[in-house]
Length: 145
Image (cartoon, rainbow, N blue to C red; front, side, top):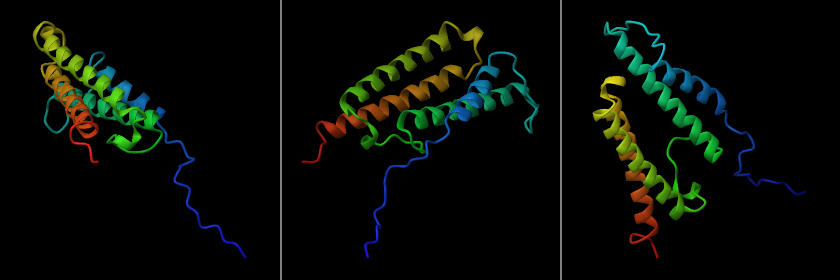
């Protein structure tokens, strides 16, 4: 009698990413127009719009992760990357684009966006740069032999 006890490590269920993308897009777009909000416990509708925007950006990130890596999670492991060298260089470039966008929105377009927009973009850019430098160092000078 042969018993098959092998575990399939490949998850056949594709995680739902569309719902996160739709809700996240709606919440993020709401920060620009029409800015539908509640006063919330802090009695500030504009702050509530910002909170909705941050929740929307978080949902968009979750959607991107699930779509890109076909699994649930939040942190992209190096094992998930097909070509870590190329992916991390692209990520580094995108991080610098976010930093430039933060400067542009915080200085030149300041009147057209909510005040913390540049700060949030700078945070996203810094996190992208941090992750890409980690991957580059892990596959380069700090690589295990």
